[in-house]
Amino acid sequence: MLRTAVLVSGGGTNLQAVIDGVKEGKITNTELVRVISNKPGVKALERAEKAGIATAVVSKKDFASLEEFNDALLSAIDEAEPDLIVLAGFLVVLPEKLVKKYSNKIINIHPSLIPSFCGVGYYGLKVHEEVIKRGVKVTGATVHFVDEGCDSGPIILQKAVEVQQDDTPEVLQRRVMEQAEWKIMPQAIDLIANGKVTVVDRKVKVDLK
Ligand code: GRF
Image 1 (cartoon, protein in one colour):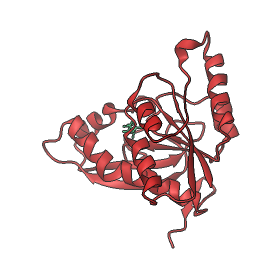
Image 2 (cartoon, rainbow, N blue to C red):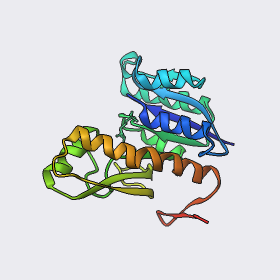
Image 3 (cartoon, helix red, strand yellow):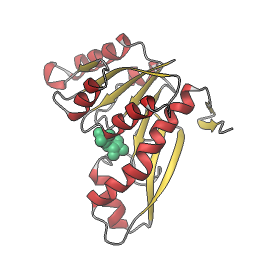
């Protein structure tokens, strides 16, 4: 069983897709051991509690320095003894110590086709605003391993989504979630849990047999 911890900051629709995936058997060999939020009271925590998953809140506000917060975050993760850490809308820059310790064991979902519309400052609705502003006809989502950079780790899965002429950022965000994010995030976890993902020279090989 792949012991999986999920880190969240908000609505948790990707977390929900993972919870449902495990329940429905689309994600196999996986146990959701802990959901950690950097914000108290968010909907993602509610979703976790409803599914009977242990939760923890590690909020910057409760610590005097960034270093103390980072240490507390690392402890909350270590305590869960995870084999995989899933960032599902986690709006915190991960401490280097954490990234190094869990090298190729942290995955993130980004709402564009990396390397377009990613990097510093590209998160949430901003990504979709920029997609519409540039007038690209295709966008999508990417699941990737997390390295020391921003959205720069090895890419595991991507899925394209069409941009419609009259899209608002909100409408596009929803379509990218429904058609891409909620599909490739559960799929990536299932692939990892079943030993089908390997990283060679910073590139991911997926055994789709
Ligand atoms: C998603 O768009 C995800 O791609 C991004 O943050 C958002 C999280 O949404 N990293 P939710 O909390 O899963 O609903």
